[in-house]
Image (cartoon, rainbow, N blue to C red; front, side):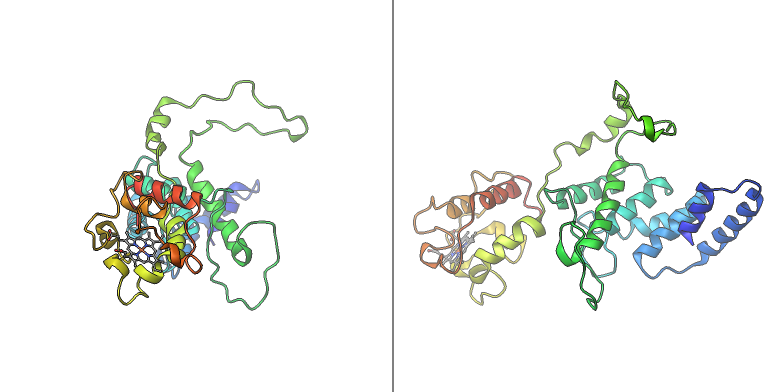
Length: 308
Ligand code: HEC
């Protein structure tokens, strides 16, 4: 119903404006009573009502309901109990900002944008796990992420829409004659007001625990220090952030939050501490040492404050 509202507005038929108007207002009344089951429906309920010019007072509880679902990591999830992803997060922002009146300078937005920037892959995409029952094989579109590529493409699109909303708006859009396209000589300057509102974007760390750190810990450390190790070797336990920071039996903290270079753990994984090379030298057949790139990630993660 919601895309239909938008379509009627964007592509009016001359002579039927009054009828369109009536139809949209009937849809509006209907939408406010709907009971969404998924987050996707909840977002489109707000978008549809906003497109149908519902007044801000009526929209307000719907805006709050979406804000309340923001998770501690700044993102939103598609269903209760699932981790945050770029699809639900991008959708939340497009609805909150374009019709819900939530400004990009709002902390709700800032936390979410940090989540999106942290979880983007270097090639530009976002990964979203497919929830479809795999009754048919996927086919290759060329987008990354294998069997999850289709939902990931959608998630990437929503993330890009949400991020674009933090950029200066082009005030008027003149219809483009595609046959004689030319670009303006001078790029439009961003207005100071807007750049000040998005200054906080600078220096946002691009490290994500789940994507960048957890896999390497699981591969090279967890057998001896993780949940599966009944007795944690050297009393070093990596199952929570608190345990991780504390370090092992020597009493030396494993990390100095904010200072990767000075952290004991970096010395251990780069074999600078004799007899505390990690993973232990004799076990590297089963537990490979960290690559240079992984050491750099571990360092930036500590520098960024050990986001867990
Ligand atoms: C095969 C088992 C094994 C693996 C895999 C392993 N460790 Fe250890 N780790 C040990 C043992 C054994 C000790 C105790 C060494 C000692 O105190 O002499 C220890 C101790 C530690 C300590 C505590 C040192 C202290 O101050 O007491 C840290 C920190 C540590 N390991 C980090 C890591 C990290 C990070 C990884 C993965 C990159 C890793 N370990 C992988 C066996 C392992």
